[in-house]
Length: 399
Figure 1 (tube, rainbow, N blue to C red):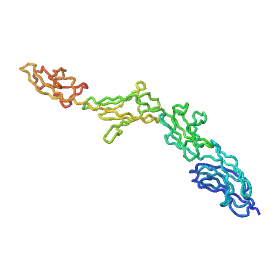
Figure 2 (cartoon, helix red, strand yellow):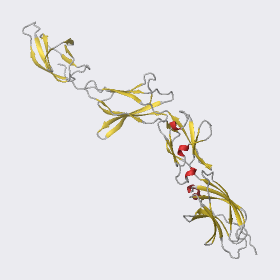
Figure 3 (cartoon, helix red, strand yellow):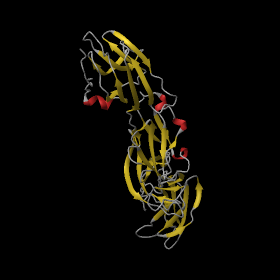
Figure 4 (cartoon, one colour):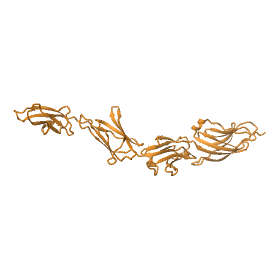
C-alpha cells in the first residue's frame, strides 16, 4: 500500500535570522521514495560539502511527497545539495554559481534511490546590512572620509557598492568591488558638491539598507597666527589673532578652544562658541588679553567641520624696567641749578626720562648709567620717572 506523506519544514529559532548571512528561498516538486518498503527517512539538505556542514530543508518517510517551498537562513554560502537516506547519500549535486552572480540558481533535478525525480529551484540572497563606522551623524566634513562596513563573511562577489545623488540612479563604485569596507571622501564621488546628499548601499541579488550623508565645508585653515607679547611686566596684555584662508559662509559659525601648557600638559582654559570674523580681512581676534605662557588653539566650524589644531605659540613676558638713584648732589648755593643725580638701570632698556613731569635728556655716563643735571633745590624733592619703549615704568618707584 502506498502512503501519502507531507514534508515537514524545520522550524528555526527567531534569533537565528538576525545572525545569519544568507537567505535561501527554495521550492520543490516531485516524488520522494515512492515505493519504499522500509520506513526510513529521506532527507533533502543543503550545505558545504567540504566541511560536511549541511542544513535540512525537508524530510519524509516512505511515501509520496507533495509540492512545497520554504525560506531558510544560512550562516555560510552553500555549494552542494543532496538527498540522504539514513547514512546513505543518495545523490549530491554541486551548485555552480555564475561569476558576479545575480544569486539566482538554475533549476536542479535530483533523483532518489528509487529513481523518482524532484525538481528544485533556488534563490540565494545575502542577508546583509551595512553599518556606519564614521561619522555617526548624517553630516560629514569634506576634509574627512566616510567609512561604512559590512560583515566580512560574504563571498567577494556580493560586495558591489553603489552610490546615488540627485536622483541620478545608482552608480557602481568599482574601486571597492569585493571589499567589505567602503572608505570614501568627497573628491572620490564625481560631480558631488558641498551640501548635496549622497546615498550608499550594497546591491547584488538584493539591496542592503541605505546610509545617507551630506558633506559640509572643511573648517577654514590658518593662513597666519599672529601674537603680541606682554608689554609691561605688571600687565597681562598679550594678544592673539588668526588670519584664515577663507571667509565663513552665512550658515557657518566658529567654535574655538584655547589651551594652555601646564606641567601636566595642555588644558582647555577658554571656550568661545558661535564666533564669526570679518569676511574681508579674514582676521579673527581673540577677544580677551592673554598672560604669559605657551598656548595652542583647537577650532571647528558648525555644522560639522573637521577639527583643526594650531601649532603652539608663546606669549613672552616683558622684561621689567628697574632703576636705582645714586650719587645725588645738591646745588652749590641758594638759587643755583647745578644739582644732579645718577640713575643706574638695573633691568630693562630705558627710553624716556622725566623730572617732575617734564621730559629731560640725561647724560649717558656708561652702560646703564645716566646723569640728570641742572637740578635746583626743592623742599619736597624731585620726582624722577623712567619709561621704556612700551611706556612701561619701574612699577615700584616714582622717586
